[in-house]
Image (cartoon, rainbow, N blue to C red; front, side):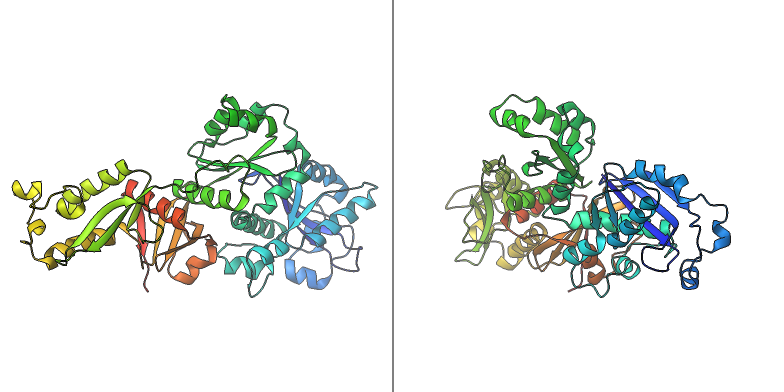
Length: 455
């Protein structure tokens, strides 16, 4: 659990500042669950440059509560939370100083979004809150006021969690939050899970990830892990003390994240999974008569496939549909093995490519249309899918036929050029598994929105 906050102060000498405004958003990693926003009477003068910067003056604070009047609420809302702030060292020092004046030892773990951003979003022109969020397309209002800056920090932290592909933030959070480790019963964990699409991470007591999975209903899937009686499930049940998750909205994003996270983290209970998630592929070649032939075969790493399949049956179903949709020849797709004409030609449903009757240009044009439709080789495009909220969408970015990464954007935020797109894309590895996942998903979901980008 995180307490994301921003503080405005009077300015002045080091450790003599007073708080004039505070905003705290309690954030569970997915949504804000509580908040506290208040002006505070600092009982001291505000420096003129601070008045000009924030717009907060002494007359505005005359009837505001003093710090001791809101101290209990601050303790309660930050209890068992990691404090998150932009330049956390400053905000934490100010809070500790105010509590010390009351004779109270205020002690919390902290995370700084400046440090996190420098690590996860390198090479930015500036890491000041205003300039950073603007460059990332994050809306900010009431700049230099506690609520406006705290809300911007919430949105920035959400993006940083998305970009934290190594899961260092979450693993560190679990180590720092013992209550997450010490759930006495699995039912307590299940109750906290959402009935949503996403990726989940099962941890043992020291925060180490022992299993990663994907589900269209995380709550249901975690329940299965804790109730199944097979050997692996029993081992997971013994070691599991916490489950974290990332909702993705999009099943495709969940599949891609699951694949990459397993490869990166190598959880002990994922290692038994087979190395590849596909066994067969569709290849093309030109025969001696210059016709493009299609052939289903076992995956061969030395060849570049048009697309891949989990098994031979799904590959065969796919090519049979292609024969119908594109009026392809059964013989030249390796479905009807013969030295003469194919069966469809005999019943006048094939134009005769199998016996050299149809011109190669005409036949090959249809085959090339089919290949272009089912391969993203050399294409620059974005697949738009569901987001985590109703006003959000996910983006899967492919550049020159290479999968580059995923991101989320608000519906009000237009993807009008590649630079805008790249600003919110989290880079991911391109490999044969990701290609298979994307192509399989595109075959199953014909109504996906795909934006073709200019070269």
